[in-house]
Length: 477
Image 1 (tube, rainbow, N blue to C red):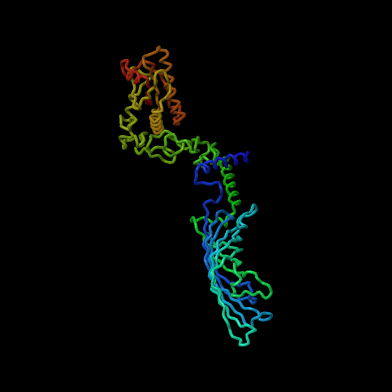
Image 2: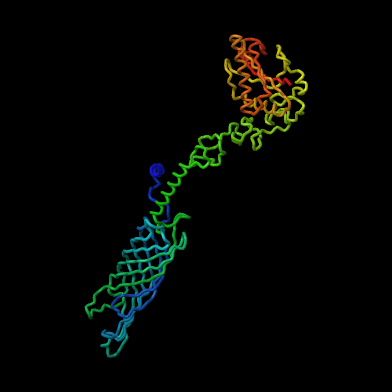
């Protein structure tokens, strides 16, 4: 199953890559590609002059890598060749030459050692190169012939530009994201036998001259900042890393740290409290949007914009049961009862005296708290009234030794018996919300039905009917 998930996710990740023309499926496509190098070292010539002389050569190179293994480069050197002829068995009693030369070579480069299925790319890589170019010669020789009885020193010259074929082998050690140091051997097969100004055919030797160079190199990597050069990247390693990333994503897809039923890959909050209901993105449900998830929110229906504490309780500075955000009178004395806007109505003592005794007559009692209105024939409480019920609940809980009578009402339509039952069910529905949602003690709540007998608005228009489909609250002790 895990392999199937890895394959599926890999295919999903590949689709957007193929859909964009500038993207590629090949790894490390954005790595550095250019190498600019300096080289310097010693030279010696393999030619007709039998006694080798060591000298120097130094120059510049520029390489572009098409891939992890293949590239092209141009390099140039300026240097000197020296040597002399052996006197034994040769026609010279003395022979020396010096050649101040320059060369430009174009080569193909193959880098190896950076591709392995078993290990990461190492800091050292090896390469070979081959190509051809041109070489300019400024050679001078001095010699004395054995057959010359006067032993006069003579001179010879060779000033010409010739073709040469080149082969190179080297290694580079990576010392950072931008620099590598190395050692390189160069061989040049020259298109002439006169590089040493000597074409000796006494023994039938007509071979072309050859140059050998051993040079230290310093190479500078150019390209995107922060990226490694492709020659020091193992592409197989990059594939392994991509597979590891896919496996990691599969693990995330199949994991659920906080046990909320939402995969970690899609879960924006991996610290959801235990038991919390969550949205599709794994964030805990916060019904009132106050920043406190419902599972921790003591007041899950705080008015929008209310300042709340860590328990989700809206600030209520005057402790009148109405949050500051809704309180028109924010400094009410605690001895007063207030309406749902925090406006004082009367003292609590007076409210108790006016409360109905032994049942309600027409117009009896005092409703200081907001009425809860219902649609025709229903007992469902509208969401808009939950804020009112929360405020009522908080007012009740903050008022000691209080007992509340909840009275349901109905409009005149329908039979009297049906309206009596409907009004009672409305009162019961309100009591259930106060108890179950807002933690009011059920022992201090009583319910009663007025049916259709106590209308507060006369007439048959929709507004009057709406006003009569209500639940009211009264303090009875």
